[in-house]
Structure formats: C-alpha cells, structure tokens
Amino acid sequence: MVFLRSLLALALCVLMLWPGPAQAAPGPVLYAEAAILIDGETGQVLYEKNARHQMEPASLTKILTCLMAMEEAAPEERVTVPEEATWLMSDAAAIGLVPGERLTMAQLLYAMMLPSANDAASAVGIHLGGSLSGFSDKMNRRLAELGLKDSHFENPHGLPARNHYATAYDLAQVTREALKHPEFLDYAGSSSYFIPAGPENRGYSFSHLNRTLRRGSEFYDARAIAGKTGWTESAGNCLMTVGEENGRRLIAVVLRGDNDGIGGGAYRDTRALFDYGFSSFRPVTVPLPGEAFLLTLGEGGECQLSGPGGELTFLLPQELELELEDCTLEISREPERVAFGEDAFWGEVVLRDSSGAEVLTAARLPLEGHFLNPAPLGPGREVYVPVEERRVDRGDIPLALGGSGLAVLFLALVNRKKRREAEEKERFWAELDRREGDIFAKIKEEEGLL
Picture 1 (cartoon, rainbow, N blue to C red):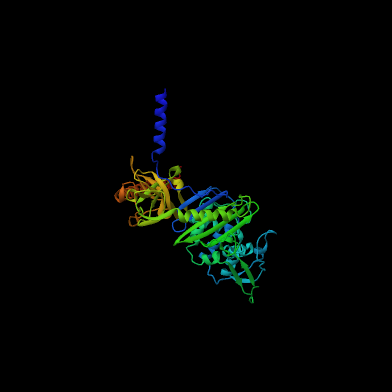
Picture 2: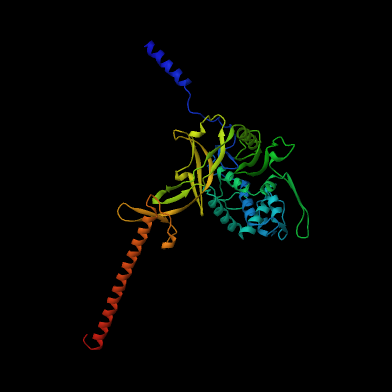
C-alpha cells in the first residue's frame, strides 16, 4: 500500500513537471462586462471578454454613422439641419443646432465624434438616408456588407431604442473599417475643434470627451490616437480607443465599463488592454491560403469561397514557442465562423500547428465567392451552379466544383438543352392535336353531323 502511494505521488510529480502545450500569457482582468482588443491591420482578436454578446452600444453607434458619411459624402458638402434632428431626449448630448442652419459634413462629424452631439448625428443620418428610419436601413445593410451579423441599429446616434444593439466584436470591426479613411483620425482623434460663425451657421467650440486623448487627464495615454465615448443609463459607460505604438495599431472596445466601484473603469480597462496588447505579442509572417473550397451550409446550401493568397503578417503571443515552418494558416471551414453579407463574404483565418491543432485566430479577411445550387446529373452525380443563374449559355459557363470540371457542367447543359427541346416538341404536337380536333369538330358542326 505504501509502495502504491509512493508510485502515485511520483506519477503526479512527473505530470506536474511535464511540459504541456504552449499557452499565451493570460490577458488582463477587466471590470467591464464586455471588451475586446483587435489588431487594426488584420482584425485579429488579441483578447476578448463576452465580445459576442449583444448589448447597448450607446454613442459608439456613431462610429458607423461616421464611416458611412466618409464613404458617401464629401467633407465640404453642405448639410441643412432639419427640425427633426433637434428632437432629442431632454438629457441627450447636443451642441444646440438650430433648424435651417447649414454646416459642412466635416463640421458635423467633428461635433458628432468629439462631444458626441446627437443633434449632429441626426442631421448626418437624415441627410444621407432621407429620414432617420431610412438611414437606419442603410446602416444595417452596411453591417451586412461587412459580414457583421450580430448587431442591429435603429438610429444614427445610439440613444436607447428597441432592437438597437451591438457586440464589442462588431464595433471593433466597424472601427477597423473606418480607419481605412485617414480623415477618421481627425474626426475621432482631435482633442478639440472650433466651428467659426458664418452667414448660414452659428459658431461652436467643443472638446473631446475621451479622456485618454486629453493631456492633463489622469487617464491620458500617449498611445491613444482616436476614440469615442458612449453613455446612457441603461448602457453604462462605453468606450472605443485606438492606440498606436512602434508602428502597430490596436483597437480596444469596452462596454458597460463602470463596474470598478470607484469610477473610470472603462479607462482603466482600456489601459490594461493596451499594456497587454503592445507588450505580449510579436509580428510573424506566414503564407496565406488562396485555394478555393466548398462550404456546406444548413438546409442543403452551398457556397464556393476562396482566400486572397499571398502572405499575412499577424501577431503571435510572445510565450507561444512554435516552429513556424511547421505551422499553416487556414480559412476556417466552420459555417458559424464565416460571415455572409450582401455581396460580401468574410472568413476567419486560423493558425494551426504541425499536429493540426488550432493555435489562434490570426485574422479576419474578405473572401471571394458566391452561393451555389446543386444541379443533378444522373445517378450519384451533381454539379454546382451559382444561385442567381437562371439560364446558362455555352458562352457563360460557370465554374463546376467537386471534381466534375467544366466537362461535366457542359454535359449537364447539353442534357438540359435536350430536355427543353423534347418538352417544346411535346407541347407543339399537343397544341397541333388540339387545334386539329377543334377544326374537325367545327367542320362536322357546319355539316350538321353533330
């Protein structure tokens, strides 16, 4: 018995000392209910906490409004403030726009992003969408195009509304898209802004509410280059901050970040995320897959997708000691990890070690592809054609998948043509028989034989 106990103790010691799989350093402990940190270049998730939970985004909604304004309007475009834009809740943030005054789109975006003016956001939304509801529809279509399926917006500003929600993950990806426009760093990164009075508008002056960007604040962070605040009683404190250090750009989003008990929890969480992200990762470059693959969806749906190929530089945890020569990047074949928008496809690229085990999600990239319908071709054979195809001519033969090749598809088209010709001949003879029968009946009736 003593021998058995000694043997078990020895085995336990060996197991405790045996090196397990390499693991990244644990992320920071945060106060916020939900948070995420991503790489601004690839969208790679470096840390997340409840990041896919649907929550109220408050004024972080305005990031998408700003993105769409940059995409659809020129900075100097004049916007007339409609009366509806000034109809806000009594305690809603605003700069006091007057119905009928005219400002440039850029001036409204500064007012919307720095002091979080809801009247400016409403004016932008109505100008771009024709109405608040019209712009809401456009916002949700844009989310779908970006492959972000877990958020839904009812207005351009983020004031509480039924069915107005977002995830920290989606908000970070929207910010990443906005950063593709250099002017976003001005709209969301200036510490203050002044709108001079003119013949069509009053003068306005305001400062940024994000304290990571304000020198002298206890939460000032020299790494912060842009940000957006958000708060409602139901949403709590929300914060988006873009940080940059040594040429690397990270995006941090914190939702309901006021649970530290002393105030400033969202800022403390953001600083902890940046400390972790800028110190715990190193850039590596690995070949990116470019081959086509078939993704099977629910209810028999199919989708042909292909990656961009080339190389991808992403961030690898410092503690993760891997032989990169034995690692591969792979576009995930899991349908729940591929987002389908309106004419857009997005996939998560994962890093796998030599054993095939997934190490981390390395990037989020747009994919080429289209939905497919299976078309039967004899027993046990089928060919895939695009869903939108109704008629296919020989000069416009789509790609066949599953090893059948263009030859199989060509045979399918030839057989389909033969079936159509046979059906047309059958209809022709049936119609001829009907007409002949009518003629004979009429002749007999005229001759009095009926």
